[in-house]
Image (cartoon, rainbow, N blue to C red):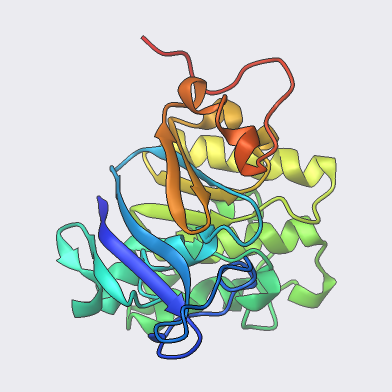
Length: 265
């Protein structure tokens, strides 16, 4: 369970420490002159184990900043964040083991020259045994259909393959929650379908999935719940069929016809 209570994040003069992700401080909100631009404003949210949550909003709405508080990549200026009952700021290692993060651009988190070395990077930093690291790498690559490709160079991969390696690297930490920030940006249709299929399978196996996006067409049918952000505030928090009417007003693209979210009742 991820729990946020009254989380506020600011940037600019007097702001607390936080990440600059291109989403947090490009929304054009007014700077109050003392506490900086508000990127996330008094957000309270719970993400239960096993849920498929979509965090939706326009560019600059604060959605990336919000999810980066889940494992301490952004430190809130106010409010609290806890994972599995433990405050994130009290145990960053536990939070980052429980909440795996896949950035919008995989190049921002791919750190090694080869596929296998990159996926092994996180488990190695946990001080695990070689056998345990090998097991995690094998299982993570199998989960994204990249078994046997450990020795391939990262710079030889397509955009979709790099996305899958980034997902595998997060999975190798064996997180309770997998958070993906705009995972379909720049992918062609086959790559998008591959990532969607992987997310569907991972969720079916019990992993909680959080997808950050401004375009719901790829994930609408998978969602249990949608949280919509506008100007850093949570404007929508509802099952997909209830959320859909408000989302276009938040500059979020929704599917035209077809299935929107899972059936209720």
